[in-house]
Image 1 (cartoon, rainbow, N blue to C red):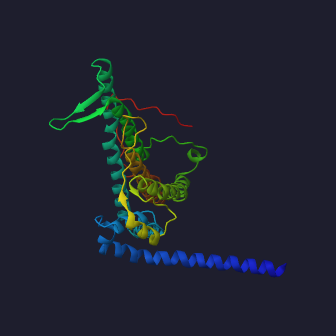
Image 2 (cartoon, rainbow, N blue to C red):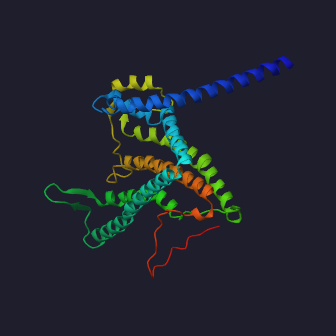
Image 3 (cartoon, helix red, strand yellow):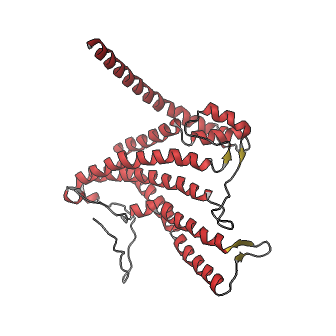
Length: 312
């Protein structure tokens, strides 16, 4: 019995050692992989060759890509610990990106309303079965196509305005202990949440949504479990097969765009997780006077009423 326990303990220690070696090896290789990708862009960006497409698909959600991103994140943070002004500039840049992407695509909500008004007018007043836009070669689809397309505008607002809403503090916060603790404890909670909840969730969803997207664009189908060698073999039979099947006979036929937005959503979450972690650390180090420092929040003009959302 004791011998069995000793063997089991030894195997556990060996497995732990192998895991540490694997992580350290991938961290070191991240520098090589990044350098190789930059100096040999044709190997994965030359989409005139099928094998380059498959390499792009593989590396887009690969272990190698994960460690490149992790090392990049860690290096920025390490430099920021040494030069806080540099890290503040990174935070400002990342939040600027999230803010302005959200502010731009928020106009999709207006387009959604205007298109719905046009659909009602065309159906109820002009009794037309279709809508035609353009001159010469017009864009003509059935009204049901435009009606289903409204969901795309809604998906744009949800996926591309998420980071903007986070920066603006517009998400509902379920607060049990956060408001009752000190400034530094709040920043610790924020750092923990971004590092152990936002980032891992984004990585997990990215891995599956990435291949979910590509399965609607190319055949043969790809899978997260496919090694690079298998995908390179599949490249021989690769062809574009963009999904254009609607849910109704004359309905919207570009549902693959929703999958593109899903990938964009995860990328925005991950970028905002970086910004939130960096900001939380800076505000922790610099104290309460740094709370909200350089934060680009929208300011309501005189006479405008804020939206009173529910908070618990």
